[in-house]
Length: 419
Image 1 (cartoon, one colour):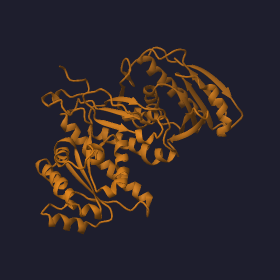
Image 2: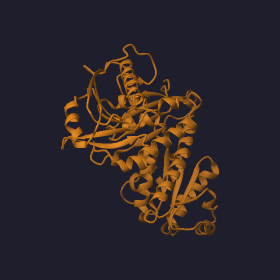
Image 3: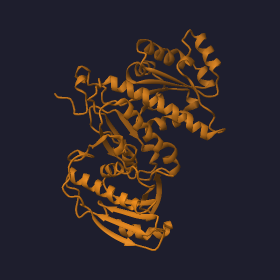
Image 4: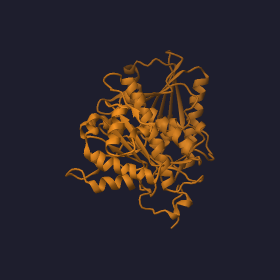
């Protein structure tokens, strides 16, 4: 059996078992700190790192020593310990989890141990390690996390630094685990629904389900600015730094506007070719097109702000009337209003690529004519949204909207490239 296209030929010698598991971190903590750890886990999941926690990954009935040790030694790519006063007093954490992590590190020093201190000092951690006869956990580049109630901005900044570090460590070991060479083509999934693609090899699992609180309802703008958009930027940096191949397989099972933000985070200038899986055929951001203008365009003018434009793209559902009804409610003042529509469905990968190129040309033309803010309303396939977002670089700020069907209202969700 030939390996999938995105698996390095060098991985044939490896057991296929476990290759489908993406980058994974073991989270060690006391139950009293579960809410704080949940924040960290949310940051990791947004970046594609699965987090192994005893609360979610063990069956009911309490801690299972054998399964926890096996997870640390065989099923995870980094060990993250949340050190608090309660954690320092836990015999189970220190006698079982820390010991297993140190044993694995001694066998393989590419397996990273990442200590996070909150409410304890480096001296206390060192003393606790010495008392048990261990190498001090402070030697593993431990980081102190501030109290979020005292300085939330510093806390979020440190949480992002920690999440970046865990992403780098787990992705590096994931690549080694699958035997990746310079031809290896990584595979990631972005999902806001309970779905994992049926692929034998998955590198990063960007799981945003919890943030979409009621199925199609997107997170508030604050979450996009503080969590999701920075997370995608970190994913791009890690992929660029650790993957020599510039062909990236993406399976997106997500409600808009999330797919736009993924494409925007890994733009054309990143030199990645995005391969959108899950269609009847793979859609690619590179290739030849035959029809330069597959979308029909209608232009409407108003006497409002010449620096503002409204752009509507309707492929899956005609939303033109809904948008027109909402523009006064949103208080948008604009001079140009462009409506793009497709007669029928997208028939091929070539047509999808042509659509993304046409939208790129039209948006750049608006910016060249002095437009400094675009308000984008769309109804289209998620894979196409990634391809269009891929073309967003070097444009003005673009605000993406979500339609609340129960209320018949559009609400702004996030703005890309804010000043």
